[in-house]
Amino acid sequence: MASTSAFYQPEPGSILEVDKAFYDRLAADTESRELVESFVIPIRSGQAWEVPAGCLCRVVTTPEGPQCGDLNVWNLHNPRERLWTSRTRQLQGTHVTRYDRLWSTLPYLRPLLTITNDTLEGYGVDEDGGRVHDLLGSRCDPYVNRILTGKDADFHCHSNLTRAVLPYGLTEFDVHDVLNIFTVTGISDQGEYFMKPSPAEAGDFFEFFAEQNLLCALSTCPAGDLSIPLWGPDARGPIEACRPLAIEVYRPRAELTARWTPPATAAYQGLHGLAFPSCTETSAH
Image (cartoon, rainbow, N blue to C red; front, side, top):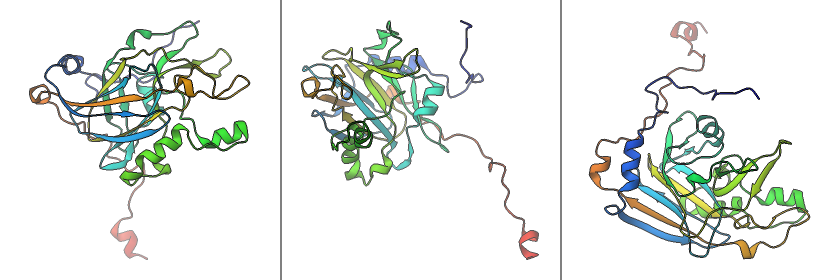
């Protein structure tokens, strides 16, 4: 098979270049960081929370065991700026880990967050070509459930996220494609999307640094750790595979972020080839 290289190749000095030493210092300084908020999201539900710019957030598996979570991210003050999974896949990869970033939609196109630590970083690529922390698949939803089973069911990740963001004035139309945390997925030789049971264990975590003021929402997937099929001939109730996830928000020592500034929006200044009519053109009519 001929070798290939990434299509998106940045020029030196691009925002795609990550200051790994900076993020390593943030990840390593666990003794001095201040716990700002912590809570547990129950099974088969969702919750939204804020992460101030310059803070760290962890998604943690509880002592009850592995669980997959579907994450949405918005700019707290402008929800039109939100996670753009397809561009993130192109810039970072189909699955993300330490030093990767989640990118926002046009016309903003800047990092929402940077991953600082990931206890499953060493999972790599398994024998089936699966990887962890997935940007390939979307969230489960009641609409596709109706297509697959002919039945209505109100508790899917899309529904959990919809309920979670209502207190922030957002609706179903604001819920978007997700980062599937602790989820192993891939594409088969037949080009079909597959999911595998989560390799996470109790206490595993996925940590990120907020590059701007964020609104996050996470669904504890009703399929649990994906060890039990949700659809198909072997499907059965997966409640036994469902577990909570914990959220922890930290403020790092001020000196660690003293020189950091939130990333600016994309510098494109054009008008997409359009031009405004001149005064002489308008006055002639």
